[in-house]
Image 1 (spheres, rainbow, N blue to C red):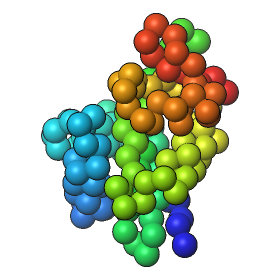
Image 2: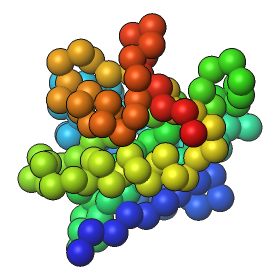
Image 3: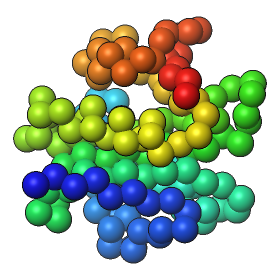
Image 4: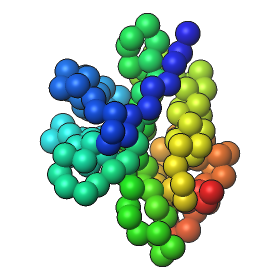
Length: 146
């Protein structure tokens, strides 16, 4: 059974869990990924380790193994840009095509107030998922508004 766990700045990941999440994104973002250092900074932002910051981490797990994850940062800029930016979403290659990405995105949309912005490469297969979930292409940035 797949469960989705939610973490915010008040629900800190343990050091080992954060290291596993960084490694997960590093391996499963494929050609759309970043360095481990950049991924760590993004996760630290959600967990408020660098000052007055916030966001959301969602983990899809099956038998305690991460099979999908989302990291979203709050922008703090209501009204003139979306309040949240989806920084990372990845699904383990063995779990792709099973609706896990869609479940994570629906959980993310339900967990935030305000809109969500994301950047997606034109050839990224995830683009179709975002469009099905109501994101639109504006200024080469896809947005969903709550």
